Image 1 (tube, one colour):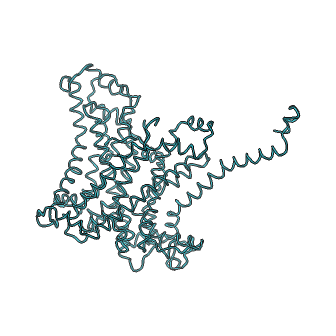
Image 2 (cartoon, rainbow over the protein chains, first blue to last red):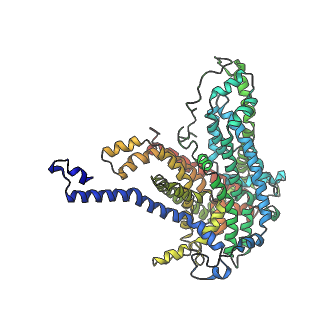
Image 3 (cartoon, rainbow over the protein chains, first blue to last red):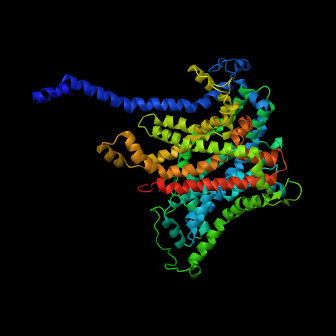
Length: 304
Length: 323
Protein backbone atom coordinates (compact mmCIF):
# COMPACT_ATOMS: atom_id res chain seq x y z
CA UNK A 1 0.00 0.00 0.00
CA UNK A 2 2.60 2.50 1.13
CA UNK A 3 4.89 1.94 -1.84
CA UNK A 4 2.18 2.50 -4.45
CA UNK A 5 0.85 5.66 -2.87
CA UNK A 6 4.31 7.07 -2.28
CA UNK A 7 4.69 8.23 -5.87
CA UNK A 8 1.47 10.24 -6.03
CA UNK A 9 1.35 11.75 -2.55
CA UNK A 10 3.32 14.80 -1.46
CA UNK A 11 6.60 14.24 0.28
CA UNK A 12 5.21 15.03 3.79
CA UNK A 13 2.69 12.19 3.65
CA UNK A 14 5.03 9.43 2.62
CA UNK A 15 4.86 6.90 5.47
CA UNK A 16 8.06 6.65 7.41
CA UNK A 17 9.67 3.32 8.22
CA UNK A 18 8.64 3.58 11.91
CA UNK A 19 5.02 4.33 10.99
CA UNK A 20 4.90 1.23 8.86
CA UNK A 21 6.38 -0.81 11.65
CA UNK A 22 3.77 0.49 14.07
CA UNK A 23 0.99 -0.19 11.59
CA UNK A 24 2.26 -3.72 11.12
CA UNK A 25 2.42 -4.24 14.87
CA UNK A 26 -1.10 -2.87 15.35
CA UNK A 27 -2.35 -5.14 12.60
CA UNK A 28 -0.68 -8.12 14.22
CA UNK A 29 -2.20 -7.31 17.61
CA UNK A 30 -5.61 -6.87 16.02
CA UNK A 31 -5.24 -10.13 14.16
CA UNK A 32 -4.15 -11.90 17.35
CA UNK A 33 -7.10 -10.49 19.30
CA UNK A 34 -9.53 -11.39 16.58
CA UNK A 35 -8.37 -14.80 15.38
CA UNK A 36 -5.85 -16.34 17.75
CA UNK A 37 -6.90 -15.35 21.28
CA UNK A 38 -10.56 -16.43 20.97
CA UNK A 39 -9.43 -19.75 19.55
CA UNK A 40 -6.97 -20.35 22.40
CA UNK A 41 -9.69 -19.66 24.98
CA UNK A 42 -12.26 -21.75 23.11
CA UNK A 43 -9.88 -24.68 22.74
CA UNK A 44 -8.99 -24.67 26.44
CA UNK A 45 -12.68 -24.51 27.38
CA UNK A 46 -13.53 -27.29 24.93
CA UNK A 47 -10.72 -29.47 26.28
CA UNK A 48 -12.16 -29.13 29.79
CA UNK A 49 -15.71 -29.87 28.67
CA UNK A 50 -14.75 -32.86 26.57
CA UNK A 51 -12.65 -34.36 29.36
CA UNK A 52 -15.54 -36.31 30.97
CA UNK A 53 -16.30 -38.01 27.64
CA UNK A 54 -12.66 -38.70 26.98
CA UNK A 55 -12.06 -40.27 30.38
CA UNK A 56 -15.25 -42.31 30.19
CA UNK A 57 -14.13 -43.81 26.87
CA UNK A 58 -10.51 -44.25 27.98
CA UNK A 59 -11.38 -46.07 31.18
CA UNK A 60 -14.02 -48.07 29.33
CA UNK A 61 -11.39 -49.44 26.97
CA UNK A 62 -8.74 -50.32 29.55
CA UNK A 63 -7.95 -53.84 30.56
CA UNK A 64 -8.08 -54.83 34.22
CA UNK A 65 -4.31 -54.82 34.51
CA UNK A 66 -3.94 -51.46 32.82
CA UNK A 67 -6.64 -50.08 35.10
CA UNK A 68 -4.62 -51.20 38.13
CA UNK A 69 -1.53 -49.30 36.97
CA UNK A 70 -0.47 -46.26 38.89
CA UNK A 71 -0.09 -43.53 37.74
CA UNK A 72 -2.99 -44.11 35.32
CA UNK A 73 -2.19 -44.31 31.62
CA UNK A 74 -3.57 -41.34 29.68
CA UNK A 75 -5.01 -43.44 26.86
CA UNK A 76 -5.77 -47.15 26.55
CA UNK A 77 -2.54 -48.81 25.32
CA UNK A 78 -4.34 -51.99 24.39
CA UNK A 79 -8.01 -51.06 23.76
CA UNK A 80 -10.31 -53.77 25.00
CA UNK A 81 -13.29 -53.43 22.66
CA UNK A 82 -14.86 -56.52 24.16
CA UNK A 83 -15.39 -54.49 27.35
CA UNK A 84 -18.64 -53.27 25.80
CA UNK A 85 -19.84 -56.84 25.40
CA UNK A 86 -18.60 -57.77 28.88
CA UNK A 87 -20.45 -54.75 30.31
CA UNK A 88 -23.72 -55.93 28.83
CA UNK A 89 -23.12 -59.33 30.42
CA UNK A 90 -21.94 -58.05 33.82
CA UNK A 91 -25.45 -56.83 34.53
CA UNK A 92 -28.77 -57.41 32.86
CA UNK A 93 -28.22 -54.69 30.27
CA UNK A 94 -30.74 -55.85 27.66
CA UNK A 95 -33.54 -56.26 30.17
CA UNK A 96 -32.93 -52.78 31.58
CA UNK A 97 -32.69 -51.40 28.07
CA UNK A 98 -36.10 -52.91 27.26
CA UNK A 99 -37.64 -51.36 30.40
CA UNK A 100 -36.07 -47.97 29.75
CA UNK A 101 -37.15 -47.98 26.10
CA UNK A 102 -40.71 -48.87 27.04
CA UNK A 103 -40.90 -46.05 29.60
CA UNK A 104 -39.30 -43.64 27.15
CA UNK A 105 -41.71 -44.60 24.37
CA UNK A 106 -44.84 -44.19 26.48
CA UNK A 107 -43.51 -40.91 27.92
CA UNK A 108 -43.03 -39.51 24.40
CA UNK A 109 -46.51 -40.67 23.44
CA UNK A 110 -48.08 -39.01 26.47
CA UNK A 111 -46.16 -35.79 25.96
CA UNK A 112 -46.97 -35.36 22.27
CA UNK A 113 -50.66 -36.08 22.86
CA UNK A 114 -51.30 -33.96 25.95
CA UNK A 115 -49.17 -30.85 25.52
CA UNK A 116 -50.55 -29.65 22.15
CA UNK A 117 -54.11 -30.06 23.45
CA UNK A 118 -53.42 -28.01 26.58
CA UNK A 119 -51.36 -25.41 24.72
CA UNK A 120 -54.23 -24.94 22.28
CA UNK A 121 -56.45 -23.71 25.10
CA UNK A 122 -53.75 -21.25 26.18
CA UNK A 123 -52.98 -19.87 22.74
CA UNK A 124 -55.79 -20.18 20.22
CA UNK A 125 -58.96 -19.97 22.28
CA UNK A 126 -60.27 -16.80 23.92
CA UNK A 127 -61.52 -17.06 27.46
CA UNK A 128 -61.46 -14.70 30.42
CA UNK A 129 -58.45 -15.03 32.73
CA UNK A 130 -56.49 -17.11 30.24
CA UNK A 131 -53.13 -15.40 30.64
CA UNK A 132 -53.49 -15.26 34.40
CA UNK A 133 -54.14 -19.00 34.57
CA UNK A 134 -51.11 -19.50 32.35
CA UNK A 135 -49.01 -17.91 35.10
CA UNK A 136 -49.99 -20.91 37.26
CA UNK A 137 -48.60 -23.20 34.56
CA UNK A 138 -45.32 -21.29 34.63
CA UNK A 139 -45.19 -21.27 38.42
CA UNK A 140 -45.30 -25.08 38.49
CA UNK A 141 -41.92 -25.10 36.70
CA UNK A 142 -40.33 -23.95 39.94
CA UNK A 143 -42.13 -26.53 42.08
CA UNK A 144 -39.45 -28.85 43.56
CA UNK A 145 -40.55 -32.42 42.83
CA UNK A 146 -38.78 -34.00 45.87
CA UNK A 147 -41.12 -32.08 48.18
CA UNK A 148 -43.92 -34.49 47.36
CA UNK A 149 -42.05 -37.79 46.89
CA UNK A 150 -43.23 -39.25 50.21
CA UNK A 151 -46.87 -38.36 49.58
CA UNK A 152 -46.65 -39.61 45.98
CA UNK A 153 -45.17 -42.91 47.11
CA UNK A 154 -48.01 -43.42 49.56
CA UNK A 155 -50.68 -42.39 47.03
CA UNK A 156 -49.23 -44.69 44.38
CA UNK A 157 -48.87 -47.62 46.76
CA UNK A 158 -52.56 -47.27 47.71
CA UNK A 159 -53.37 -47.33 43.99
CA UNK A 160 -51.21 -50.44 43.56
CA UNK A 161 -48.89 -48.54 41.19
CA UNK A 162 -45.61 -49.29 42.97
CA UNK A 163 -43.54 -51.72 40.89
CA UNK A 164 -45.35 -50.73 37.73
CA UNK A 165 -44.35 -48.12 35.17
CA UNK A 166 -47.57 -46.18 35.86
CA UNK A 167 -46.07 -43.57 38.27
CA UNK A 168 -43.48 -42.71 35.63
CA UNK A 169 -45.66 -42.58 32.53
CA UNK A 170 -49.23 -41.72 33.59
CA UNK A 171 -48.43 -38.12 34.68
CA UNK A 172 -46.94 -37.55 31.22
CA UNK A 173 -50.45 -37.70 29.74
CA UNK A 174 -51.46 -34.60 31.71
CA UNK A 175 -48.99 -32.07 30.35
CA UNK A 176 -45.73 -30.61 31.57
CA UNK A 177 -45.29 -26.90 32.22
CA UNK A 178 -42.16 -26.51 30.08
CA UNK A 179 -43.58 -28.30 27.10
CA UNK A 180 -46.96 -26.55 27.35
CA UNK A 181 -45.06 -23.27 27.29
CA UNK A 182 -42.96 -24.32 24.31
CA UNK A 183 -46.04 -25.46 22.39
CA UNK A 184 -48.00 -22.32 23.26
CA UNK A 185 -45.25 -20.03 22.01
CA UNK A 186 -45.22 -21.94 18.75
CA UNK A 187 -49.01 -21.92 18.30
CA UNK A 188 -49.18 -18.18 18.95
CA UNK A 189 -47.06 -17.55 15.88
CA UNK A 190 -49.65 -19.13 13.62
CA UNK A 191 -51.81 -16.32 12.15
CA UNK A 192 -55.25 -16.05 13.66
CA UNK A 193 -56.86 -15.58 10.27
CA UNK A 194 -56.34 -19.26 9.60
CA UNK A 195 -58.61 -20.25 12.46
CA UNK A 196 -61.10 -17.49 11.70
CA UNK A 197 -61.40 -18.54 8.07
CA UNK A 198 -62.04 -22.12 9.12
CA UNK A 199 -64.65 -20.92 11.63
CA UNK A 200 -66.38 -18.98 8.83
CA UNK A 201 -66.53 -22.20 6.89
CA UNK A 202 -68.31 -23.81 9.82
CA UNK A 203 -65.46 -25.86 11.28
CA UNK A 204 -65.62 -26.43 15.03
CA UNK A 205 -62.62 -26.00 17.33
CA UNK A 206 -61.82 -29.69 17.38
CA UNK A 207 -61.62 -29.76 13.59
CA UNK A 208 -59.51 -26.61 13.52
CA UNK A 209 -57.18 -28.12 16.10
CA UNK A 210 -56.86 -31.50 14.45
CA UNK A 211 -56.82 -30.52 10.80
CA UNK A 212 -55.21 -27.07 10.68
CA UNK A 213 -53.17 -26.25 13.78
CA UNK A 214 -51.77 -29.67 14.66
CA UNK A 215 -50.24 -30.35 11.22
CA UNK A 216 -48.57 -26.92 11.37
CA UNK A 217 -47.07 -27.73 14.76
CA UNK A 218 -45.07 -30.74 13.63
CA UNK A 219 -41.68 -29.06 14.31
CA UNK A 220 -42.66 -28.13 17.86
CA UNK A 221 -44.11 -31.59 18.47
CA UNK A 222 -40.79 -33.03 17.33
CA UNK A 223 -38.95 -30.86 19.84
CA UNK A 224 -41.28 -32.01 22.62
CA UNK A 225 -40.81 -35.65 21.62
CA UNK A 226 -37.03 -35.25 21.89
CA UNK A 227 -37.14 -33.52 25.25
CA UNK A 228 -39.69 -35.97 26.65
CA UNK A 229 -37.59 -38.91 25.49
CA UNK A 230 -34.49 -37.36 27.02
CA UNK A 231 -36.34 -36.76 30.27
CA UNK A 232 -37.44 -40.38 30.54
CA UNK A 233 -34.07 -41.80 29.50
CA UNK A 234 -32.19 -39.58 31.97
CA UNK A 235 -34.58 -39.88 34.92
CA UNK A 236 -33.08 -41.32 38.08
CA UNK A 237 -35.17 -40.34 41.11
CA UNK A 238 -38.49 -41.51 39.64
CA UNK A 239 -37.41 -45.09 38.89
CA UNK A 240 -35.46 -45.22 42.17
CA UNK A 241 -38.61 -44.42 44.14
CA UNK A 242 -41.22 -46.43 42.32
CA UNK A 243 -39.41 -49.44 40.80
CA UNK A 244 -38.24 -51.67 43.61
CA UNK A 245 -38.12 -54.98 41.76
CA UNK A 246 -34.92 -55.74 39.91
CA UNK A 247 -36.98 -57.01 36.94
CA UNK A 248 -38.35 -53.51 36.38
CA UNK A 249 -35.10 -51.56 36.72
CA UNK A 250 -34.16 -48.94 34.16
CA UNK A 251 -30.60 -48.58 32.85
CA UNK A 252 -29.94 -45.83 35.41
CA UNK A 253 -30.94 -48.10 38.28
CA UNK A 254 -29.22 -51.13 36.80
CA UNK A 255 -25.94 -49.28 36.55
CA UNK A 256 -26.23 -48.03 40.13
CA UNK A 257 -27.09 -51.51 41.31
CA UNK A 258 -24.07 -52.86 39.44
CA UNK A 259 -21.88 -50.24 41.13
CA UNK A 260 -23.15 -51.02 44.62
CA UNK A 261 -22.73 -54.78 44.22
CA UNK A 262 -19.09 -54.46 43.19
CA UNK A 263 -17.86 -52.27 46.03
CA UNK A 264 -14.81 -54.35 46.89
CA UNK A 265 -13.42 -54.39 43.44
CA UNK A 266 -14.77 -51.39 41.54
CA UNK A 267 -14.69 -52.35 37.90
CA UNK A 268 -14.26 -48.87 36.53
CA UNK A 269 -13.67 -50.16 33.03
CA UNK A 270 -16.94 -52.09 32.80
CA UNK A 271 -18.81 -49.28 34.59
CA UNK A 272 -17.50 -46.76 32.08
CA UNK A 273 -18.13 -49.07 29.11
CA UNK A 274 -21.73 -49.46 30.29
CA UNK A 275 -22.01 -45.69 30.81
CA UNK A 276 -20.79 -45.16 27.26
CA UNK A 277 -23.47 -47.48 25.93
CA UNK A 278 -26.17 -45.65 27.92
CA UNK A 279 -24.96 -42.19 26.94
CA UNK A 280 -24.39 -43.03 23.28
CA UNK A 281 -28.06 -42.83 22.16
CA UNK A 282 -28.33 -39.40 23.81
CA UNK A 283 -25.28 -38.13 21.96
CA UNK A 284 -26.41 -39.59 18.64
CA UNK A 285 -29.84 -38.03 19.15
CA UNK A 286 -28.19 -34.72 19.90
CA UNK A 287 -26.15 -34.74 16.74
CA UNK A 288 -29.15 -35.74 14.64
CA UNK A 289 -31.41 -33.05 16.07
CA UNK A 290 -29.05 -30.25 17.14
CA UNK A 291 -31.34 -27.57 15.82
CA UNK A 292 -34.33 -28.90 17.74
CA UNK A 293 -32.31 -29.03 20.96
CA UNK A 294 -31.28 -25.41 20.65
CA UNK A 295 -34.71 -24.11 19.61
CA UNK A 296 -36.31 -25.99 22.50
CA UNK A 297 -33.94 -24.35 24.94
CA UNK A 298 -34.08 -20.81 23.73
CA UNK A 299 -37.80 -20.53 23.00
CA UNK A 300 -39.27 -17.59 24.86
CA UNK A 301 -36.08 -17.01 26.80
CA UNK A 302 -36.27 -13.50 25.48
CA UNK A 303 -39.21 -11.47 24.42
CA UNK A 304 -40.69 -12.39 21.09
CA UNK B 1 -45.65 -15.14 39.90
CA UNK B 2 -44.77 -12.77 37.13
CA UNK B 3 -41.93 -13.96 34.97
CA UNK B 4 -40.16 -10.99 33.50
CA UNK B 5 -38.22 -12.95 30.94
CA UNK B 6 -41.21 -14.59 29.37
CA UNK B 7 -43.55 -12.65 27.18
CA UNK B 8 -47.18 -13.55 27.57
CA UNK B 9 -48.32 -10.95 25.10
CA UNK B 10 -49.45 -12.19 21.73
CA UNK B 11 -46.87 -11.73 19.00
CA UNK B 12 -47.54 -8.99 16.53
CA UNK B 13 -48.29 -11.50 13.77
CA UNK B 14 -51.55 -12.53 15.39
CA UNK B 15 -53.98 -9.68 14.75
CA UNK B 16 -56.25 -8.95 17.68
CA UNK B 17 -59.35 -8.19 15.70
CA UNK B 18 -62.78 -9.17 16.88
CA UNK B 19 -64.03 -12.69 16.33
CA UNK B 20 -66.05 -12.83 13.15
CA UNK B 21 -69.28 -14.31 14.51
CA UNK B 22 -70.30 -11.76 17.13
CA UNK B 23 -68.41 -8.48 17.07
CA UNK B 24 -69.32 -6.89 20.42
CA UNK B 25 -69.77 -9.44 23.19
CA UNK B 26 -69.93 -7.80 26.60
CA UNK B 27 -70.18 -10.70 28.96
CA UNK B 28 -69.21 -14.29 28.68
CA UNK B 29 -72.70 -15.77 28.46
CA UNK B 30 -74.19 -13.03 26.27
CA UNK B 31 -72.47 -14.24 23.15
CA UNK B 32 -72.83 -17.75 21.81
CA UNK B 33 -69.36 -17.43 20.26
CA UNK B 34 -67.60 -16.58 23.50
CA UNK B 35 -69.63 -19.14 25.38
CA UNK B 36 -68.62 -21.88 23.00
CA UNK B 37 -64.99 -20.70 23.06
CA UNK B 38 -65.02 -20.87 26.84
CA UNK B 39 -66.58 -24.32 26.96
CA UNK B 40 -64.20 -25.65 24.30
CA UNK B 41 -61.27 -24.20 26.21
CA UNK B 42 -62.38 -26.04 29.33
CA UNK B 43 -62.40 -29.31 27.37
CA UNK B 44 -58.88 -28.69 26.03
CA UNK B 45 -57.73 -27.59 29.47
CA UNK B 46 -59.14 -30.62 31.26
CA UNK B 47 -55.98 -32.79 31.13
CA UNK B 48 -53.88 -30.03 32.66
CA UNK B 49 -56.42 -29.27 35.41
CA UNK B 50 -56.74 -32.96 36.29
CA UNK B 51 -52.95 -33.38 36.26
CA UNK B 52 -52.41 -30.29 38.39
CA UNK B 53 -54.92 -31.47 40.97
CA UNK B 54 -53.88 -35.13 40.99
CA UNK B 55 -50.10 -34.88 40.71
CA UNK B 56 -49.28 -31.54 42.33
CA UNK B 57 -52.03 -29.94 44.46
CA UNK B 58 -53.31 -33.09 46.12
CA UNK B 59 -49.81 -34.48 46.88
CA UNK B 60 -48.82 -31.11 48.38
CA UNK B 61 -51.90 -31.16 50.60
CA UNK B 62 -51.23 -34.77 51.51
CA UNK B 63 -47.60 -33.91 52.34
CA UNK B 64 -48.75 -31.18 54.72
CA UNK B 65 -51.26 -33.60 56.26
CA UNK B 66 -48.63 -36.32 56.72
CA UNK B 67 -46.22 -33.82 58.28
CA UNK B 68 -48.47 -33.70 61.35
CA UNK B 69 -48.70 -37.50 61.59
CA UNK B 70 -46.67 -40.40 62.80
CA UNK B 71 -46.76 -42.66 59.80
CA UNK B 72 -44.66 -45.65 58.81
CA UNK B 73 -46.49 -46.62 55.64
CA UNK B 74 -48.48 -49.54 57.01
CA UNK B 75 -50.56 -48.59 60.04
CA UNK B 76 -53.01 -45.71 59.88
CA UNK B 77 -51.44 -42.24 60.32
CA UNK B 78 -51.57 -41.00 63.91
CA UNK B 79 -51.83 -37.30 64.71
CA UNK B 80 -48.84 -36.03 66.71
CA UNK B 81 -49.18 -32.28 66.27
CA UNK B 82 -45.95 -30.41 65.64
CA UNK B 83 -43.68 -33.22 66.86
CA UNK B 84 -42.20 -33.77 63.39
CA UNK B 85 -41.31 -30.10 63.17
CA UNK B 86 -39.79 -29.88 66.63
CA UNK B 87 -37.84 -33.01 65.78
CA UNK B 88 -36.10 -31.07 63.02
CA UNK B 89 -34.79 -28.67 65.65
CA UNK B 90 -32.97 -31.49 67.43
CA UNK B 91 -31.86 -33.60 64.46
CA UNK B 92 -28.14 -33.00 64.00
CA UNK B 93 -28.03 -34.83 60.67
CA UNK B 94 -30.87 -32.64 59.43
CA UNK B 95 -28.90 -29.50 60.37
CA UNK B 96 -25.86 -30.89 58.58
CA UNK B 97 -27.90 -31.75 55.49
CA UNK B 98 -29.50 -28.29 55.46
CA UNK B 99 -26.07 -26.67 55.70
CA UNK B 100 -24.74 -28.88 52.90
CA UNK B 101 -27.69 -28.10 50.65
CA UNK B 102 -27.44 -24.34 51.23
CA UNK B 103 -23.65 -24.45 50.74
CA UNK B 104 -24.09 -26.23 47.44
CA UNK B 105 -26.83 -23.88 46.25
CA UNK B 106 -25.07 -20.67 47.31
CA UNK B 107 -21.88 -21.60 45.50
CA UNK B 108 -23.06 -23.65 42.53
CA UNK B 109 -25.82 -21.31 41.33
CA UNK B 110 -23.98 -17.93 41.21
CA UNK B 111 -20.85 -19.64 39.92
CA UNK B 112 -23.05 -21.25 37.29
CA UNK B 113 -24.17 -17.83 36.09
CA UNK B 114 -20.55 -16.67 35.77
CA UNK B 115 -19.44 -19.83 33.95
CA UNK B 116 -22.46 -19.76 31.65
CA UNK B 117 -21.80 -16.11 30.84
CA UNK B 118 -18.15 -16.87 30.07
CA UNK B 119 -19.23 -19.76 27.83
CA UNK B 120 -21.82 -17.61 26.08
CA UNK B 121 -19.27 -14.84 25.40
CA UNK B 122 -16.85 -17.44 24.06
CA UNK B 123 -19.58 -19.03 21.92
CA UNK B 124 -20.32 -15.60 20.48
CA UNK B 125 -16.83 -15.10 19.01
CA UNK B 126 -16.66 -14.58 15.23
CA UNK B 127 -14.54 -17.68 14.60
CA UNK B 128 -15.29 -19.78 11.54
CA UNK B 129 -15.42 -23.16 13.31
CA UNK B 130 -17.50 -21.76 16.22
CA UNK B 131 -20.18 -24.42 15.64
CA UNK B 132 -17.81 -27.16 16.77
CA UNK B 133 -16.94 -25.37 20.00
CA UNK B 134 -20.60 -24.69 20.74
CA UNK B 135 -21.44 -28.38 20.38
CA UNK B 136 -18.58 -29.43 22.66
CA UNK B 137 -19.42 -26.87 25.34
CA UNK B 138 -23.11 -27.77 25.28
CA UNK B 139 -22.78 -31.55 25.07
CA UNK B 140 -22.15 -32.36 28.77
CA UNK B 141 -25.46 -30.77 29.69
CA UNK B 142 -27.48 -33.31 27.71
CA UNK B 143 -25.86 -36.13 29.68
CA UNK B 144 -28.01 -37.79 32.31
CA UNK B 145 -27.05 -36.64 35.79
CA UNK B 146 -26.52 -40.20 36.96
CA UNK B 147 -24.07 -40.87 34.11
CA UNK B 148 -22.22 -37.61 34.78
CA UNK B 149 -21.99 -38.67 38.42
CA UNK B 150 -20.38 -41.98 37.48
CA UNK B 151 -17.96 -40.22 35.16
CA UNK B 152 -16.93 -37.71 37.81
CA UNK B 153 -16.52 -40.47 40.31
CA UNK B 154 -13.95 -41.90 37.90
CA UNK B 155 -12.44 -38.54 36.91
CA UNK B 156 -11.73 -37.50 40.50
CA UNK B 157 -10.74 -40.93 41.76
CA UNK B 158 -7.35 -40.67 43.50
CA UNK B 159 -6.00 -43.72 41.62
CA UNK B 160 -7.84 -44.05 38.33
CA UNK B 161 -8.65 -40.35 37.88
CA UNK B 162 -6.94 -37.98 35.50
CA UNK B 163 -7.64 -34.71 37.32
CA UNK B 164 -5.28 -35.43 40.20
CA UNK B 165 -2.63 -36.64 37.76
CA UNK B 166 -2.92 -33.32 35.97
CA UNK B 167 -2.68 -31.31 39.18
CA UNK B 168 0.44 -33.24 40.20
CA UNK B 169 2.11 -31.99 37.02
CA UNK B 170 2.09 -28.57 38.67
CA UNK B 171 3.60 -29.93 41.86
CA UNK B 172 0.31 -29.76 43.71
CA UNK B 173 -0.75 -32.32 46.25
CA UNK B 174 -4.37 -32.94 45.22
CA UNK B 175 -6.88 -34.28 47.72
CA UNK B 176 -9.05 -37.36 47.52
CA UNK B 177 -11.92 -35.15 46.36
CA UNK B 178 -14.97 -37.17 47.29
CA UNK B 179 -13.26 -38.87 50.21
CA UNK B 180 -12.43 -35.71 52.13
CA UNK B 181 -14.86 -33.76 54.33
CA UNK B 182 -13.46 -30.44 53.12
CA UNK B 183 -13.35 -31.09 49.38
CA UNK B 184 -16.43 -33.25 48.74
CA UNK B 185 -18.85 -30.31 48.56
CA UNK B 186 -16.57 -28.10 46.41
CA UNK B 187 -16.15 -31.08 44.09
CA UNK B 188 -19.95 -31.26 43.70
CA UNK B 189 -20.04 -27.51 43.03
CA UNK B 190 -17.36 -27.84 40.33
CA UNK B 191 -19.13 -30.81 38.81
CA UNK B 192 -22.34 -28.78 38.49
CA UNK B 193 -20.53 -26.31 36.20
CA UNK B 194 -20.36 -28.91 33.45
CA UNK B 195 -24.08 -28.40 32.95
CA UNK B 196 -23.59 -24.69 32.27
CA UNK B 197 -23.74 -25.15 28.49
CA UNK B 198 -27.50 -25.29 28.60
CA UNK B 199 -28.03 -21.86 30.16
CA UNK B 200 -25.07 -20.56 28.13
CA UNK B 201 -27.08 -21.19 24.97
CA UNK B 202 -29.95 -19.19 26.44
CA UNK B 203 -27.48 -16.40 27.28
CA UNK B 204 -26.07 -16.64 23.76
CA UNK B 205 -29.53 -16.07 22.29
CA UNK B 206 -29.72 -13.01 24.53
CA UNK B 207 -26.31 -11.74 23.39
CA UNK B 208 -27.34 -12.05 19.78
CA UNK B 209 -30.47 -10.02 20.56
CA UNK B 210 -28.44 -6.97 21.57
CA UNK B 211 -28.36 -4.54 18.65
CA UNK B 212 -24.89 -3.91 17.21
CA UNK B 213 -25.64 -0.19 17.09
CA UNK B 214 -25.40 -0.02 20.89
CA UNK B 215 -21.88 -1.43 20.92
CA UNK B 216 -20.84 0.70 17.98
CA UNK B 217 -22.12 3.87 19.62
CA UNK B 218 -20.25 3.03 22.83
CA UNK B 219 -17.10 2.30 20.85
CA UNK B 220 -17.30 5.71 19.19
CA UNK B 221 -17.53 7.18 22.68
CA UNK B 222 -14.28 5.41 23.47
CA UNK B 223 -15.63 2.63 25.68
CA UNK B 224 -13.35 -0.40 25.93
CA UNK B 225 -14.42 -4.04 25.80
CA UNK B 226 -14.70 -4.30 29.60
CA UNK B 227 -16.70 -1.13 29.92
CA UNK B 228 -19.03 -2.20 27.11
CA UNK B 229 -19.61 -5.58 28.79
CA UNK B 230 -20.47 -4.11 32.19
CA UNK B 231 -22.48 -1.15 30.90
CA UNK B 232 -24.31 -2.62 27.93
CA UNK B 233 -24.19 -6.40 27.72
CA UNK B 234 -24.60 -7.31 31.38
CA UNK B 235 -27.51 -4.95 32.16
CA UNK B 236 -29.39 -6.22 29.11
CA UNK B 237 -28.86 -9.84 30.20
CA UNK B 238 -30.21 -9.34 33.72
CA UNK B 239 -33.75 -10.59 32.95
CA UNK B 240 -32.33 -13.92 31.74
CA UNK B 241 -29.95 -14.05 34.70
CA UNK B 242 -32.88 -13.58 37.08
CA UNK B 243 -34.74 -16.46 35.44
CA UNK B 244 -31.64 -18.65 35.69
CA UNK B 245 -31.05 -17.75 39.34
CA UNK B 246 -34.59 -18.65 40.39
CA UNK B 247 -34.63 -21.90 38.43
CA UNK B 248 -31.12 -22.69 39.64
CA UNK B 249 -32.07 -22.17 43.28
CA UNK B 250 -35.03 -24.49 42.88
CA UNK B 251 -32.87 -27.16 41.23
CA UNK B 252 -29.88 -26.64 43.53
CA UNK B 253 -31.93 -27.23 46.65
CA UNK B 254 -33.11 -30.51 45.10
CA UNK B 255 -29.62 -31.99 44.75
CA UNK B 256 -29.80 -35.73 45.34
CA UNK B 257 -28.55 -37.91 42.48
CA UNK B 258 -24.88 -36.87 42.66
CA UNK B 259 -24.34 -37.58 46.39
CA UNK B 260 -26.53 -40.68 46.18
CA UNK B 261 -24.33 -42.21 43.47
CA UNK B 262 -20.89 -40.84 44.27
CA UNK B 263 -20.57 -40.46 48.01
CA UNK B 264 -23.64 -42.02 49.58
CA UNK B 265 -23.87 -38.83 51.67
CA UNK B 266 -20.40 -39.25 53.10
CA UNK B 267 -17.75 -38.76 54.24
CA UNK B 268 -19.14 -38.01 57.70
CA UNK B 269 -22.42 -36.67 56.25
CA UNK B 270 -20.53 -33.89 54.45
CA UNK B 271 -22.59 -34.47 51.27
CA UNK B 272 -25.81 -35.53 52.94
CA UNK B 273 -28.43 -33.21 51.42
CA UNK B 274 -32.00 -32.32 52.37
CA UNK B 275 -33.56 -34.55 49.72
CA UNK B 276 -31.13 -37.33 50.60
CA UNK B 277 -32.18 -37.05 54.24
CA UNK B 278 -35.86 -37.10 53.21
CA UNK B 279 -35.21 -40.19 51.09
CA UNK B 280 -33.30 -41.94 53.86
CA UNK B 281 -35.98 -41.27 56.47
CA UNK B 282 -38.89 -42.29 54.29
CA UNK B 283 -37.49 -45.19 52.31
CA UNK B 284 -34.15 -46.40 53.58
CA UNK B 285 -34.27 -46.46 57.34
CA UNK B 286 -37.99 -46.77 56.83
CA UNK B 287 -40.92 -45.77 58.84
CA UNK B 288 -40.42 -42.03 59.14
CA UNK B 289 -42.76 -40.90 56.40
CA UNK B 290 -44.36 -38.29 58.63
CA UNK B 291 -41.01 -36.79 59.53
CA UNK B 292 -39.85 -36.96 55.89
CA UNK B 293 -43.03 -35.11 54.86
CA UNK B 294 -42.33 -32.37 57.40
CA UNK B 295 -38.87 -31.94 55.86
CA UNK B 296 -40.56 -31.85 52.45
CA UNK B 297 -42.73 -28.97 53.63
CA UNK B 298 -39.57 -27.30 54.93
CA UNK B 299 -37.86 -27.71 51.55
CA UNK B 300 -40.87 -26.17 49.86
CA UNK B 301 -40.82 -23.16 52.19
CA UNK B 302 -37.04 -22.67 51.83
CA UNK B 303 -37.29 -22.83 48.02
CA UNK B 304 -40.14 -20.34 47.99
CA UNK B 305 -38.40 -17.95 50.41
CA UNK B 306 -35.08 -17.93 48.57
CA UNK B 307 -36.78 -17.48 45.19
CA UNK B 308 -38.87 -14.70 46.71
CA UNK B 309 -35.82 -12.90 48.14
CA UNK B 310 -34.05 -13.01 44.77
CA UNK B 311 -37.18 -11.86 43.01
CA UNK B 312 -37.76 -9.10 45.58
CA UNK B 313 -34.25 -7.69 45.12
CA UNK B 314 -34.56 -7.95 41.34
CA UNK B 315 -36.00 -4.44 40.86
CA UNK B 316 -32.65 -3.17 42.14
CA UNK B 317 -30.58 -4.90 39.49
CA UNK B 318 -32.75 -6.19 36.66
CA UNK B 319 -33.19 -3.87 33.66
CA UNK B 320 -36.14 -4.38 31.39
CA UNK B 321 -35.61 -1.48 29.01
CA UNK B 322 -34.90 -2.38 25.44
CA UNK B 323 -34.94 -6.13 25.89
